[in-house]
Length: 127
Image 1 (cartoon, one colour):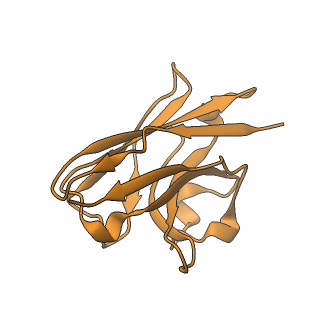
Image 2: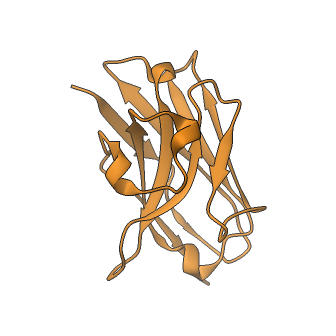
């Protein structure tokens, strides 16, 4: 069974930074493009970013462009999300997931194209 585990969430002040990690268990992560999503209370799950299997291509939601950076270390079987300039509206549970679709055919980050979701990690941005 493919399992992903997120970590790194915390309470942080506006303008602060966090680095989220997504670790794979039981399989090689480098076969898959990996996405980060988030879900705030009462809202739908929203695509944040995605990285190709090689790490050579990335996608970002407009709301995080210029502030967030996705990366991966296939040797360590991990994917990361560096979040800078955090805002209260970034508060959510953050999830990572893999897609079996070709990264370059993903026009939008749709949660229905992803599976093997982790349990999520809470990010709270508040003063």
